[in-house]
Length: 101
Image 1: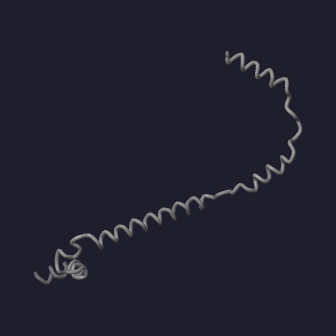
Image 2: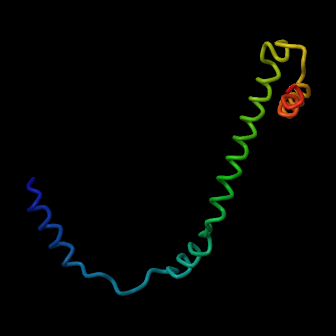
């Protein structure tokens, strides 16, 4: 079937049936009910959702890295010094060099 002829026939039928000027029954009530159920979300809601998701992801990554650092082989077996000794030597390195001169 030719699409141009079909289009002309449909337009002719549509012109023979004029639109109705009456409003459908309870149209206003349906529209106001739809408007009342529509929730307006502000920009802060989107930010809050994103930040909570990011916080959960950061917490999970921190926990995985913490578990990995505790369970990793060779944790503290490289030497007999602990972190406090290394920290003290680093902080006082300048003082120790001046006293040796």
